[in-house]
Length: 104
Length: 158
Image 1: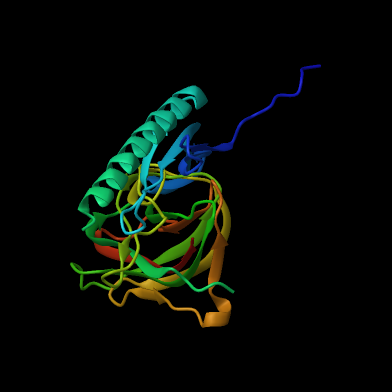
Image 2: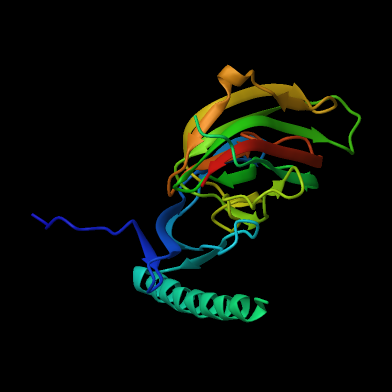
């Protein structure tokens, strides 16, 4: 008898300051059917099924859309999200500095 | 009930189509919900009468599509959470997703086109999830023409 398996289907990556930076979701793709005409008769074609990790890079501004990137594995998805979280924190720091500097 | 964050559309404009495919796909992500207010299919190149059918489906897996961003219907609105991607929001499927339920299905003459405009009580509410897909589909091959189709929804997002 095979062992139960833990499947990670979703997670969130935060910046060091605790701000949500990215969401990761496991998404299934395909597996549906399509009716095709073959020699004048309808035939059903079933498409292959696969999975992909959606990495939603959360926009710091609601007026700008989030960006969706795809990754084949959970580790790749985490790597991408962590790298984005780092850059997001870096830019937030710069913006805070700029805002402070603009004060009169 | 929370206030909607905006009204958005995904329009596939005048694309030559002659196969049974999903034409518009909207991914409603986790932490959001969408209330579908309108869907339509019509064409702009053929004057010969011909019958076909359109379906609005809830898919449990993604279709592989051409990525296309959802458009806000007003200026100054926040961006839609139905983010675009080849396995997210987009048009013209090259591989079909799995249909979990059919919300609406109706035959029509391609000379007239078809409009899904439910009364408010009958609107389909899709609560977001990792695999929350709304898909407008030709379940069987339509007569060849340049079809325009669209989905419009009220989005509830933080």
